[in-house]
Image (cartoon, rainbow, N blue to C red; front, side, top):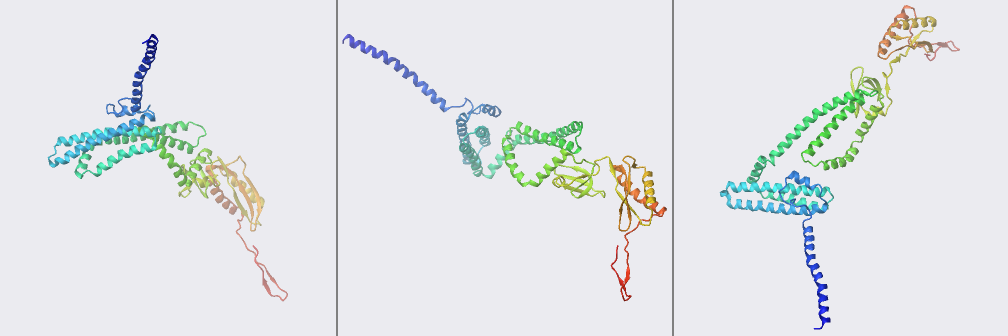
Length: 444
């Protein structure tokens, strides 16, 4: 072999050795990549070594790509756990009456272990759904779990079902846990009622210090604080118990449209009630004329207004009718004018009647001197000369003055020879050319 041949062979070896080394070192990288694709989630999340609370916490940062293989891994775990339960049940049935208590306890332990698997399986599927996983995959995963539960119950005997129920009742993760949660919810609800009442009292005190705030709006805001305290408190309690309240918000949002459509009139009353509370055309204790009814305002809720008539009838008027009609607040002002009309006969003295009326009005202690009362001849009626008498009084004295003047004027007119005429009809009889009497139409 020549020197050139030897040099050529050595050159080829120098080039091939690095390539061979690269090929040998590249293979582990591919294997490592395949291994990463096989398990794309953190270790230990596919077994029961982590408690359920910690497990749910560790699911928070995982992405959809990490959750998908993890969900499939827990589906396999659920399959294996169910297989173990089935094998133990088959063995117990084969033994029949000779089955030992240890075998039954072993099956109960396997059922409890499977429940722990199902809890983590459900947690992974729920996290996958919330983070935008494939809905079809989420549905398949949930259907698998529910199918196991349904089919297993359908294939159990009455005795086996009863034993499972008894085991569930005494299980710390079953009936005892449910009982504790119910007790916590009831206790929390009672506590929330107490806290809400305290918040309502504090709200009344705070809103009572705000000037120009009506009693109606004051009461509404205090009640709003009461119910908001209960609602927020219940959400906190449910979240602390591990209940996912996100579907609750979705349910409320979806039902809002249906409720709004079905309760159009009620929502109209609600809007009108808020307008009444904000604009304050009247307040509790005011005497008003609304919706064709007159009475004292007892209460105004967000949907209706309750008034009491002078004869103590209680009338409830929808707020939409109140706000959509003319509202007359009789007691809104501190003073009112009493409008009265008194008539005298055409034969009586106008001057004398003027003096008598002025004397009666000036002597009444409840009539105000400012503004000055107005007493004038107002109309020459069909049967009488009519005076208008318009004194000013405090709002609370209106009816007392009205009744007093009515009685006093009658007595004084009688004492001074002034008549209060009643409607009269005048009849005239005329004769015709032959001397016959003809009855003409009466003239009032």
